Length: 229
Image (cartoon, rainbow, N blue to C red; front, top):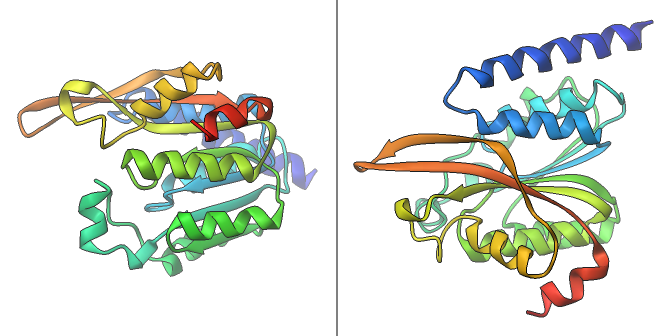
């Protein structure tokens, strides 16, 4: 009975968050919660924890169906330098200690501090077989591709990988930043990436910026072509 009550609580919180996103300027995150509810992952990996807001929302949406959710969060946390902040067009994240406190009500939470080219690569050896990944860390094309390749290696077949930061080309140099080039490359290798139906718009330096997300369902039989291209 207690488990049912907890799951109903998480369902109510998730529904309220969905309603909030519908009327907010952060509509694209609505798609993230819907994917969680649809695919019902048990092991979630997030690259770019930032302030932990999305972390707790994904965990609690997943707990509507499964109590023993495992969450793995990767970030530089307080070690993010001003130089990296600029070169990755990123945001200053919350400290690892505060994130740990924020997520303390959820037992199976594991945080990794450092550059993902090291921490995520080492994580692969743990053989956790992740089934849902959200990539929203460094925003340079090289970093996103590297995060994707390592995420795939840490995942099970048919896992879901979600990419944030697909930009309208007029607002940013997509050859340097964002997931646009990754989308193009995935499509060329027949991965069938799909856009989520919500996007956000805002003004920056007199230009309209539009951001949306896409996701891909992993087929490891196609990985050789992608990684060697």
